[in-house]
Image 1 (cartoon, rainbow, N blue to C red):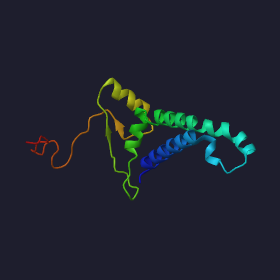
Image 2: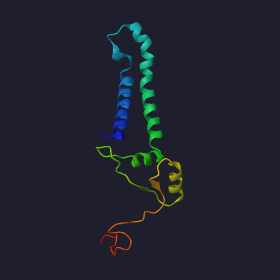
Image 3: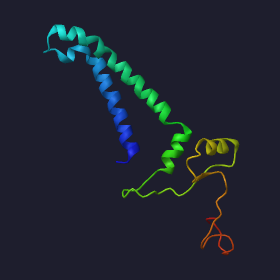
Image 4: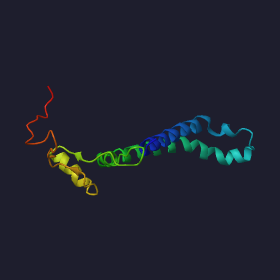
Length: 130
């Protein structure tokens, strides 16, 4: 699994176990003494909502446009070699803002990519599919 899949699995398990803790509450620990349960019950009752809120906040922070671009630019294959060479943003105000928001990524740009090679400029070949 890649790092993003691992983070997604952790987020899923947090929400899942938070739901179980909220649903079962203190009865999950029925064999334990009542004194312990009286102290632990309020904590267990709060775990579910706290886990749910934590997962929602984590997702909201993690899925911003700059972070999505960072994740895309950081994609690697199974040998941990980078597989994204260039992230081409649209030459719009939003694209320029996103480029400014990711100054740590030199491969993110709104500048046009100049084609090279056999299908590039001056080769007599067209990039258009027919």
